[in-house]
Picture (cartoon, rainbow, N blue to C red):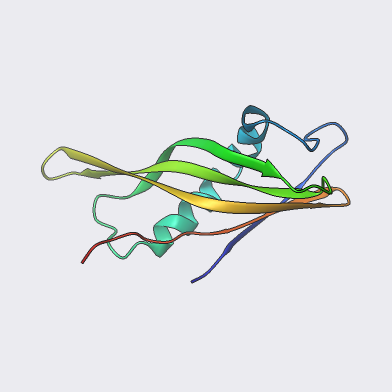
Length: 117
């Protein structure tokens, strides 16, 4: 299983630990394409042009030392099948851990494809 690693440079006053879900989401949105490409790359079935939508954050927590923590990024995997005008979506998530070092916050997570065969 591959991991996704995102490094975000932080300017003074940008994102200060502890932060809220609403403060974190714009930073995640800036990396939507990277996250989308990572998740879609893990999918075995790419029919319907899968892409992510409706990103949200939950379970935000911080380490006691104030330099890191974790959160869950929820999203829908949307598909549109052109020959039948059928839309479908599937809710899913990635659990991320983050760590602040100097002027960078690094986010690491891995996506598991949940499919019942």
